[in-house]
Amino acid sequence: MQEKIGLYFQLEIEDPRASLSLVKLALDRLSQLKKGDMQVEYFELRLHRIAGRQKDKQAYIKLDGEGHTYIDLDTSSRWDDAFMNAFDRIRDRFRSEETMAAGG
Image 1 (cartoon, rainbow, N blue to C red):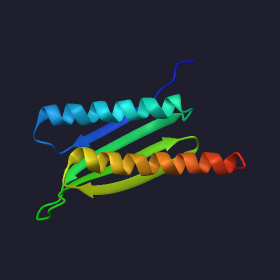
Image 2: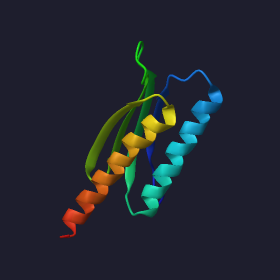
Image 3: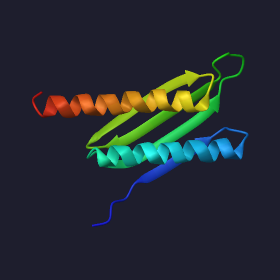
């Protein structure tokens, strides 16, 4: 059976290379989750700027998988940091729930 995942990207980034780099980073991270036995059905990444702030880059991530929906948001001065911080918290929550479900 072929696995499917819904992907949604909304990126407010001026540099196309930076956009491509972040999409690749997101796909690499999703691949790591799959290797860790998490079935992801839907992934959403929204990146946008917040005017007038030093940490003006915001990443919103929504991930549906394993019967749960995980959402996180982070703001940073760098796009990749905002993405990684939000993504890592989602990954950690998944691992924590997986450990609790296994009785550990």
